[in-house]
Amino acid sequence: MKLSEITTDKAISVLCELTPYINNIASDEELLAEIKRKVDAGTVTNRAEWLTIGVEKVNKIVPILLKKRKADVLGILGVLNEKSPEEIEKQNFLVTAKQIAEIVRDKELIDFFKSCTDTAGSE
Image 1 (cartoon, one colour):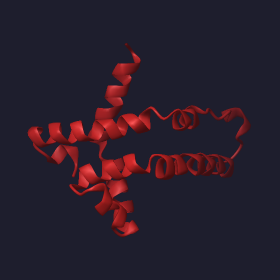
Image 2 (cartoon, one colour; image 1 turned 120 degrees about the vertical axis):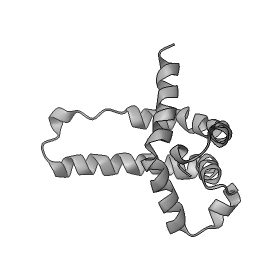
Image 3 (cartoon, helix red, strand yellow; image 1 turned 180 degrees about the vertical axis):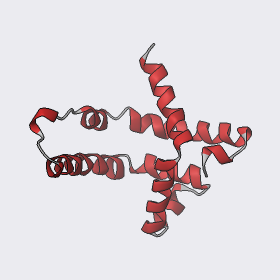
Image 4 (cartoon, one colour; image 1 turned 180 degrees about the horizontal axis):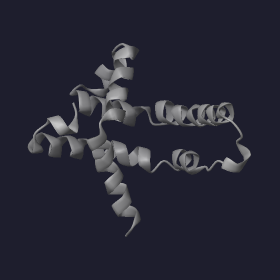
């Protein structure tokens, strides 16, 4: 479900259900450290090096999300697809991958949670 396609009543319910999962992921120190780890752009000379750096980052972030924060990821997918985390866990992986891609492309949902973290950081 896309945030832009549901009623206010449903959106309030969904956002309330999502918040604990998002908070758990967003407050993971190991994940935050990797995301914040800066690349010295002056040392990168070509696209292949940028690609290598990107792959290295993904290789560090994905295990955090899919191992350490698995329950949170399944919870988010469950809420947004109106299924239990157990149902998400048992479904075909290609279905899950498509659901993840849909979430990442839901600009309104991403912007909503970004705005919450921007506000919290400025207080």
